[in-house]
Length: 184
Image 1: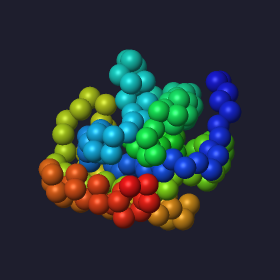
Image 2 (image 1 turned 90 degrees about the vertical axis):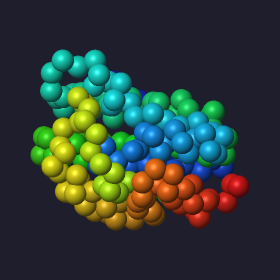
Image 3 (image 1 turned 90 degrees about the horizontal axis):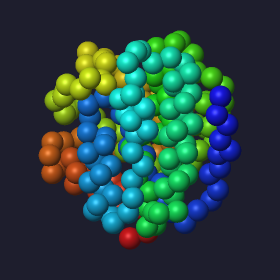
């Protein structure tokens, strides 16, 4: 198993995480916000990882995605312009592990508790479902939305639920960042 020394030192860079159920526009929002705020965004490592799989994910795959997401975030932090936009976090690994395997390794849970994000944008399920071979649970979006809320509350995170369609959704994302950021 790959070992990655993770750290999350205090920083002047504000970190915003975009999370939520499948097909809620997380990646699109991350790209939009990074462009709007002239910064970088951390893509979802799991998407690239799973595109290369020809089988169902195993726990080992989830652990690889955990370390891959952390490494990608660490790599991109120095490129950020006061603000880092994260398209998902390792919280997603926990949610998938709990759902698919019935448990999450302790080191994943600990990293979630210790990794700081200034604010989370929780994407609502008011967007229509878009088919994608990497998506699995169209019928469980409401369930996963509630799981994300519960997980955010468990770590006492601040978050904004992002609703709306099209430009309204993007504007709501921008406004959430502006409301919780003092870098602009």
